[in-house]
Image (cartoon, rainbow over all chains, first blue to last red; front, side, top):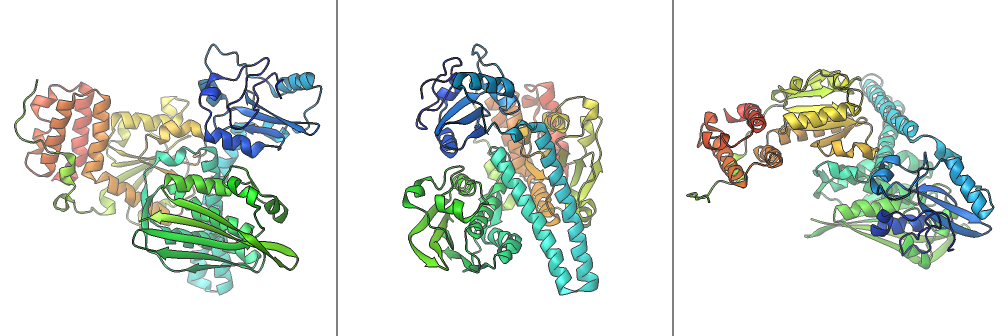
Length: 354
Length: 219
């Protein structure tokens, strides 16, 4: 594709090309990096609007089977205004377009209408911000109330069923906090580096996450076994908690019902090795190099579970990297058939230097 | 050209067991939380022995003078300061006037990168929906920072560097600070008249309140 009014991606290996009308901002050309590459890789063949890690909008258009990736766009209510403004030189022609104007230009240029213009994205960013702020506050209140119920039940009723229910409510609120933290990390990846590292027990973080996810695993009748023991402590950022959460949640999501997940802890003199093993949809060998890419989901994974955004392992990789933890992903190529379902072993390992 | 005799003390000289200060009780460290809304678990936090006062807002930065640790919401406070950055502006003002205080940003807006500049000024960030055991852990962590003479010096050093203090005076100040903890010089001798003469009025004022904040550790 070499004819577009806006900057466009011809190959993910290179920075965007100039458009016929609007040039690609110098910032995008000079700073094209692995984050940009991973971002564009995750959009391939998925029509719609997206926001790149630096705040510019990207629009993937489907033109009768051929997809075009127009990018470095400055569109109202999609691009992040402040981010874009600070990355554009004053002498660059870069007007902020209304979505309707952008769509008009595209429809005239390609003689087509945009079927995937993503109406949802038109919701103001501020509105979304306020909603998330409110959810965190409500969750705080929910935690306080469920904590109160748990204490009262423990003190007065001692009914094991009620106690379990109260624990479940508390677990759900803890899960909601972790989910919101994942959202924070996704939206604001620089945030974790604003605070200092703190000492934490790795085993304890896995234990807590497994407890929080127990309702989810029970629904699929999956048992999660923690094998081995570890007292290893590390200096970690608060965001570390997402790492066990995302790995275990991924394992539950892609495990068959009535199966088990094994979490093995093996401590040696120099390191702590954690293995998370589950059985799920086979990963094709050609997909393996992309498993850690943002937004990537294997063909069988998509068929197996409608849930999932392809963010989990990408975030795990990012969190592991900032803590100098080695992440290994080993999908077993050998598969077997169980009750008409093709399954294979999936192993994720974390090696933490002590 | 300067010539000094002897080797000046370094802050790392305090990093030995003999200078580890005894841990104060939680109640001995005064903390303030500035939030226009109800503070979750406030009673439980106090029940755990923390000396935490709650202010819905403050009219002047000096209001935090008597507190070692300041927890500050990012939004909804600082009405009198009429800054659109609200609590974030308060954080930057506290950091400017009291660069040695432990500041904790307390917010539910942690997903918004436009606040990162202010989060970076804080020593820690607490999200609004943490549980009581995490509150206890984080506040204990804040106390540890507040009583760590090395951590506090590093904060004040960053401030002094931003004030363009000469490297020579900085080495001298660090030497005097270490001697203060080693009880080799008296409180009234810090900073020495020689160095004080080279400092800006702002730096003198900051060092004065810095020393007051250390009183409980030095006496």
